[in-house]
Image 1 (cartoon, rainbow, N blue to C red):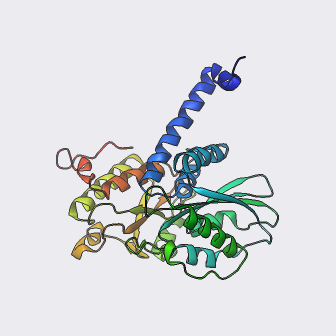
Image 2 (cartoon, rainbow, N blue to C red):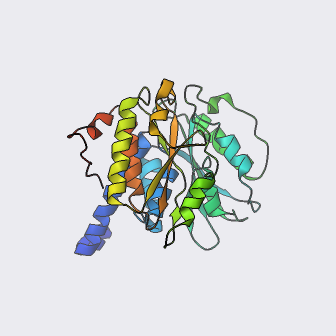
Image 3 (tube, rainbow, N blue to C red):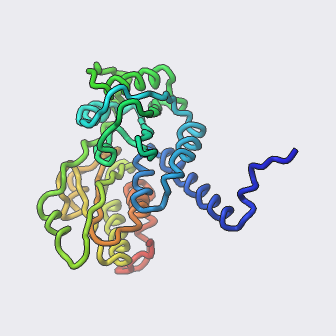
Length: 309
């Protein structure tokens, strides 16, 4: 008896489409393996049209379900929810847990959400009653997770979603890992910049880059300068805006003075302009530039612009 699984790969177009999907899954695995949230990765890729919505569920299943073995549970929403402030505030403190929510809205669309990321809730706007969400949880303090804590966190997440108070659980918190709060909305100078020019200028959400070097020192700063310089040379109509602790950073050198940004700190960036592209690639390079592997961006002669984009 023949296995029909491979029949769709019989054409060149379908084979290439499948190959691109497999490459994308491999990239996503690398991101999750370095403690990036799957929903953060996928929403960035969706914004850039690097991933299609039809790929969301296969990637979720392949990566956090089968590869990383997140605990998960399906949940029918009992009431309509449109205020997510409490959810963001509470889950942002659960630093020992990685959480991903998949929501199926009334129109048949699928949203993948990091409950700690306010931008994702802004995209959803509302969770409709009697519709399905699936909550995924992974305990990060050991490689194999912890089923008991993960199940408890899912129950707590369900309680939050219906407006109940959730008492602090010390097992949800990793005292050694303290991500900074998400910055506030951009200050007026950035808004004014987005309004000028002949075309439609828009801004991306703020995306985080975690510092994995022991300190964000001068070498990391210089690598970021090289990366951003390369990005702006390739995309002269785009601007890269950097934030730290809600503050607009005009001089990247200020990020390493007096050891300001330490290991596991979060720096945020935003791209502003027309025809925004390559943001996912920019985030990946900035992540490398904030890691012990920053020296790869410092090679070459003085004044040479890197060809990264």
